[in-house]
Length: 171
Ligand code: 4NP
Image: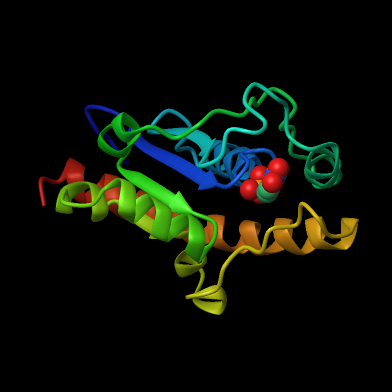
């Protein structure tokens, strides 16, 4: 049984916070509930850009998620802040540009930089790979993005379970 004093925090980050990171947000919160970890991990998402602040996810991202039983219609775009780099235990970039931008935001703070990851690295099959930006492509891109994120989220749930277990046992 996993117990922890406070929930772990996971912040999913992309460029616009309307396609990839809301998809990752919705998938992770759903898979955590299925894994019995819904109360142990707090999930959020944000973007590095400001074009879509306050907007719901792109209709194509919502439709693709809904086809797979995931509802992301409640999410609204927000911008990542420096405070988020302290508040969240895992700050997870969708691609290498996002990763570089987050590392630059965290420059000079090794504790912040140590919490920044690439989503692909949570899936052996996808390690080192970006979740490509589907915004300017066709609907096909959204399905591929969803499937890659789903694989990575499965690995992330396992990593979070291990992290919660080791924190609960004091290691
Ligand atoms: P996202 O996709 O980073 O996956 O949310 C994008 C959405 C909007 C823009 C770029 C990427 N944009 O330039 O408006």
